[in-house]
Length: 272
Length: 127
Picture 1 (cartoon, each protein chain N blue to C red):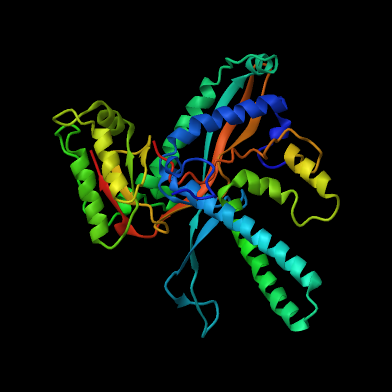
Picture 2: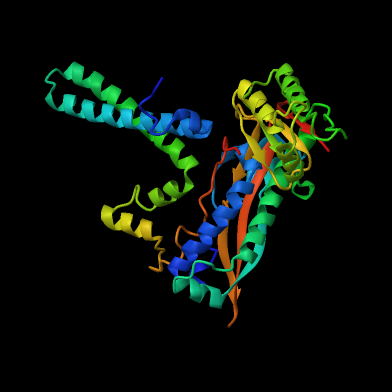
């Protein structure tokens, strides 16, 4: 048994399968950051840091005539979102019920996706993570207050800025839920859907994806040529067991990772 | 233009999936080459020719291993199952069955895939 202690939970194999599938179905559509960046791993729960290849300034060592430097690393962060499943629901599931109440699980999955996307796009200062938007070496392109009509123009401009700095495509676009809804509901003068216009821009610049990213504020355009944005997974998204009583089973979704931006010029932030 | 490595219309596949498809095709080609060299080596009487073919087959071993590792890294569930089977002494079928059932050292099968949801890389997937 590993540290997730699933073997201690009063949950049958069939119920575990349903819980895992429900979590995956809830997480995957929301993991917009992961759809734009390189994924390395998983390296396991025991993986604690990413080597940065850098060292501290040289200082006097513990003996005369000996200098020392310390290796710099990026520590792995652990994210955990607890949730509960009623034991009565698990019993119903084992009897063949198809309408199991997984609301708490879905809430936890949604929050985990928000947290992962926020770390990728906006960073996590406490953990030394700088997100794509903050790390960008280009001036942000404000989306402005002119509704959503200017989005295709702003996105095309962002692609031009990245390309001008020598970073090739394909290019991907991440939109916050608010921006995505606005784009889907809007049309240009003449009735051409904004979503179709943005897809056309992406198709003609290398056929990168458009992703929906809860946890992102605004829009981010980034190159997807590879090697620029590095998500290093320790333990990939997993479900573990915490405790239970006569009524509830307490579980959690957990993952560990680091994130680095290797090429600050490979993305542009478009804040609201 | 159609390509054999695609089972579905390529334009409907993400760039990530198309890359995987190329590596799957490469993996099969390397396995085929290893098989062919194995057969040629068994019948070739010329020692120098055998030496060259053995050297070439050695290269294919390396290529196969690199292709396989690439795919494992992008398909965590496959990698996890393979870890239960590869490079172990004993009964291969038993290891395979145990890996599939997610059995741990205690024989419990409550852990399924070890707890990981096996999501891994989603790069290239869009709306």
